[in-house]
Image (cartoon, helix red, strand yellow):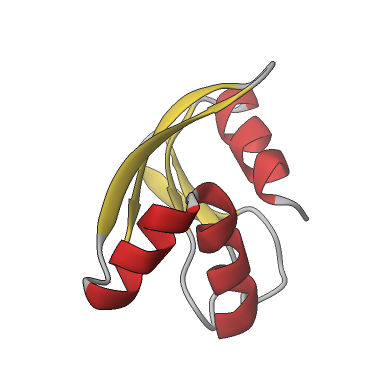
Length: 86
């Protein structure tokens, strides 16, 4: 599943938070309850690909030196989201 699909699920089911963690399936909070949104566990490489796809070149460089980043993203037709990557 692609990252945009995770966000679409979040929006369509009134989710509040999306959690992407290495060696765990993607999960989201729905009405205060954390539930998996896919059965496939995320690998370190896949999670890095998702994170870096959200960053520009400078943010990637900064992240390599200080592995925490806050940013906002907009997905056309889906919405605007706050993102924390660590």
